[in-house]
Image (spheres, rainbow, N blue to C red):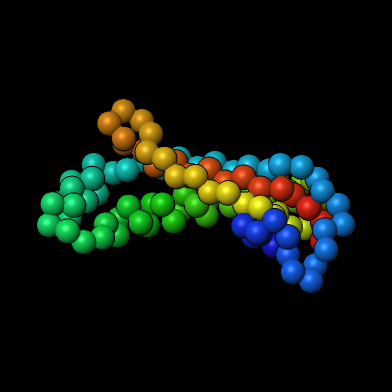
Amino acid sequence: MLMTTTPTIEGRPIQEYHGVVTGEAIVGANIFRDFFAGIRDIVGGRSAAYEKELSKAREIAFEEMGTQAARMGANAVVGIDLDYEVVGQGGSMLMVTASGTAVNI
């Protein structure tokens, strides 16, 4: 499944539009990762634990979107938009949503 944030794929004209597809993923943030991320925030630097969780959530959202597009008979998803949010009580979870248009190229 070819996936892109652009509305078209150069040299590959869209033959058929199937509709909007979405994928969502919410992952919980571990209390120990939260603690060490908080320390990192105080002293500066990147939080590898959170980056890993965001990456995992994004992969899940893309996988769901691709599965949904395949069920519609599409072979590509164009115009993908990603959204990241912190949800849950006290911001204890990370949410990634992805949406795009399922097409045949």
